[in-house]
Image 1 (tube, rainbow, N blue to C red):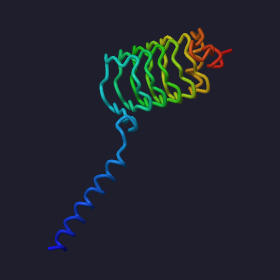
Image 2 (cartoon, rainbow, N blue to C red):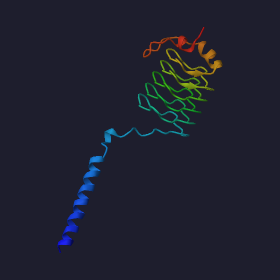
Image 3 (cartoon, helix red, strand yellow):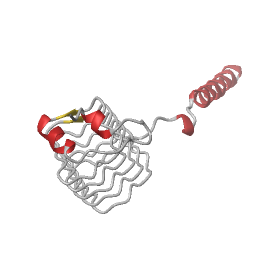
Length: 169
């Protein structure tokens, strides 16, 4: 009888220790890493993401026509093959983003921070770029020439002029 009660007590003690170990090793919900934002190949046209934290998000091959990203944090986001025709990105942060083969035609890019962004084979026809900062961004030479035709203003966050950040003559 003593051996059965010892086994039972040992089992209870082991369960209490295991339960305590699980509780002590649990990570509080506030300390969990941010979930990945993935809008790959999705139609996001006419949606409102204004002032949203979308840092590091993935928007590969997404339709974002007329989408509102005003004041949004899109730093380090991946926008490859995205269509942002007539989108509003005024005051958005796209620093460090990958915007390869993106269409920004007719977009409001006023005061956007594009520092250190990669924007190869990306189009900016009829885009409003007043106050945008392109410092250390990688942009095709042809597009830089197009952007320099209308470049003006100073970015209110970085204090850098649009013409200077593009290296306009």
